[in-house]
Length: 152
Image 1 (cartoon, rainbow, N blue to C red):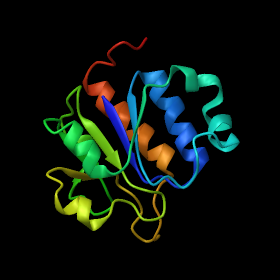
Image 2: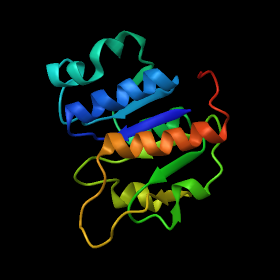
Image 3: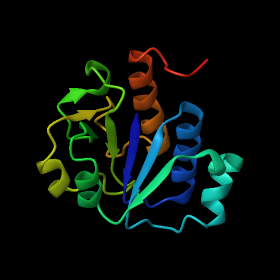
Image 4: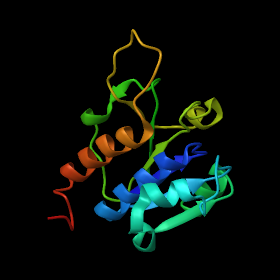
């Protein structure tokens, strides 16, 4: 499983996601520009001492990622998705793509998305779940469908 954060802005969220990736054996891809540097103490503090175990790749832009992994299946997450995340059959090599905390995924990226899913939320409030919570929710559903490979 691969997890992609496109232009994340908040270091603590990325640190939290990194820790989740380590604990699930998931590769993390960060797409620049980042709203912080990976050496910032907030990122390291949130990721605790897990960073040395993190399988991390940083990409200059989303197109570089897509070019490198051109045959992969990408699953995008957005409040504009039509189907819910739990109604999808995930594969063990899927790339789960999440946008930045304040902007989500840009329209240019969503326009090329074949699969866009959403997390059900209260539509009376113009906000979304925290990025780290959204990632954990979706990632664990995908891993559950796979039988939690490599996890106890």
